[in-house]
Image (cartoon, helix red, strand yellow):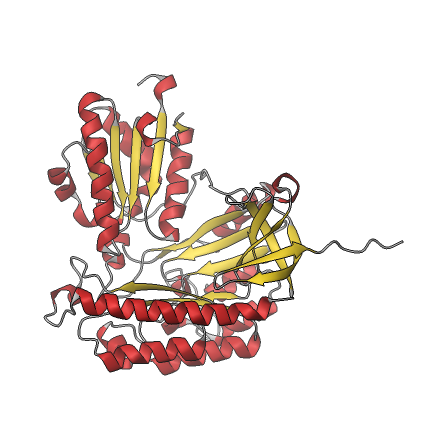
Length: 452
């Protein structure tokens, strides 16, 4: 492969963890001398970083792959890589389905991309899906933003929710050391980043696998301790974290978020169902009453906090009255944002084998009813912003209106206002909110008065 022809393209499906993995793999490819190509058809290394949470994401991967596999017959130098959760789940079966593939690699192998590609360039077809200890993240990601950045703090998941493939494809929980995490955040501060999001599939489990306990007998390293430890990193103005699990969400963590000025008042805590019997069948390990207590506690410390969550409808055996318990919870809590999905049986999960699957019609009907309520409640929650002055971190130009910039409030509401991106990118701007919609806001920048 000549230097001039070393171009790569990555398509990412799925969650924030996948986006963070893609940025790290892009960093490795650039260290190897590859250049990013916007058009996959001009790239000679094409990487699909895949998601297996829902069946439609998986099918989309196969249709993209089919197109590039055809191209490979004309361009044998083309290198095709499938990474991420579909790769981990399917392994060698992927090669049987798409023999044109060069490399199949699970998410635990993201940092090994260079070694694996070198094996491919030596003429091998490679499958890397064995469980490995994730060695410390020494890669320099090619980050999509210059303002906000993901920072992985824990990989994998030890939970065993009956609908979820993540533990099987991302492996057991492995926490990074606080020192390594802080060093990465310090480097981001030096590079001019203003906001970081600490990432974990189950971030509240952070530190459970690290050695050390306090004199009181609790783990020495927890997410709460980590927030205190990284809070004073220079130049970083905002800290977020995701995704939380209600089973491990503590008042100590909520108190830390209220006390630490850089931690944003935004919590993403999936509840999945508002019915205790369904939660039990899902093996979630909490009740809807416990979930409500968590939200009440957050609001007692931070009345204006934004709450977002995930919910599944049409889980096997879910009755109409159980589904209505989910509607009741959504109505009474009033989420700022809710990611909703109809249950999709995933290979290798217990729930996929149960007899009591619901019809697609029932699932689709429930999803529509839930989405209608979500939009109504989000629009109600947005009303509180009207006329308020909000602190917005400017991230980019509004792609639909170049005269506007866009950014997010501390509560994670997307906000647009007039401005020049060249002057404002990365700045925190006070904006008076003049228009509210269910999931976004429009405002006017407030010019501070200049003292004589």
